[in-house]
Amino acid sequence: MKKGRSWKWKNSKVEGSGKALACALRALARRDHSEAELRRKLRDKGFPAGGVDGAIDRLKVLGYLDDRRFAGRWADSAIRNGRAFGPRLRMELLRRGVAESVVADVLAELTGEHGEPETVAALLTRKFAGFDPKCADDREKRRVIGYLQRRGFSIAAILKVFREQ
Image 1 (cartoon, rainbow, N blue to C red):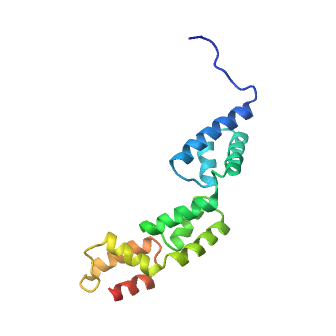
Image 2: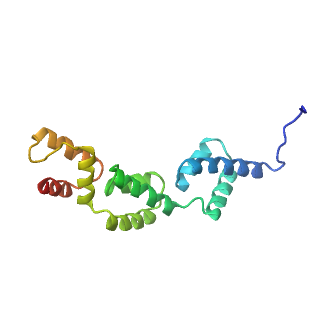
Image 3: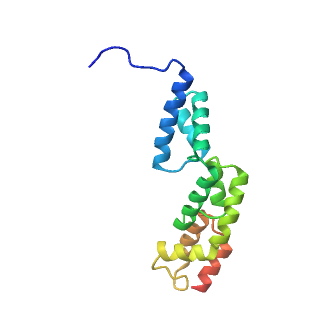
């Protein structure tokens, strides 16, 4: 093995962009990210701003980075798993750096697919299998209602499901 200096790019911007692109691809291989999340990750790893911008632009051109796709997948998963709905879902997507217009489009699309009462009923069945609102005491009802409200479900939808069960 030959000893000596390691090979380096002459232009540090190209070097930073290439390394940032490789790092971003590894992150995207694990899970989808929003543009803002990926920018923050790359900056936190110490990549220069020019390298981060170059990597982000390249990923957009290649189609690997798309905030609309990220928001749709993340929101659909959050609704199906009962992690978020309605205002909570909006807040979570905005916190992840997705633009307000994209969030509004995605939520409008998903609201038609996932009805709030149906999602509440499915979550109750899955998370609280033995829960019966007609037989439960007030303390247990408050606990379940609080759990559902923290996830963004409206009290009207929750009480509607409680009456129907």
